[in-house]
Length: 88
Ligand SMILES: [Zn+2]
Image 1 (cartoon, rainbow, N blue to C red):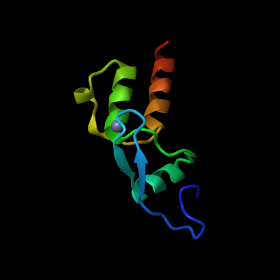
Image 2 (image 1 turned 30 degrees about the horizontal axis):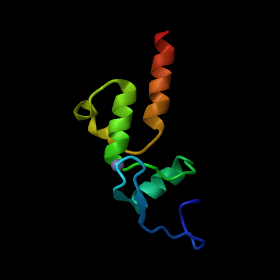
Image 3 (image 1 turned 135 degrees about the vertical axis):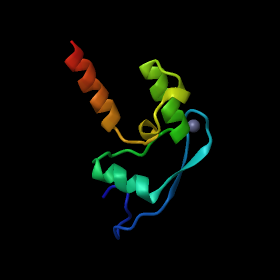
């Protein structure tokens, strides 16, 4: 449980976004999600900037990003790689 403390408890963490430099909350729920997915590192960007960065990578505009894709998880990126692979 990399995001839990030594007693296995979670607490909201405040992280400064590397893109817009706003502080955002890495919530308990998100930390548990990261642990479930075995993601070792906390997000470096706030939710908004991650959505924008992802949209730029995918060539879509941020307002076209479906709500579920704004969630932190790496699953979408893995899925997208798989889709691209199948198309070839
Ligand atoms: Zn940001």
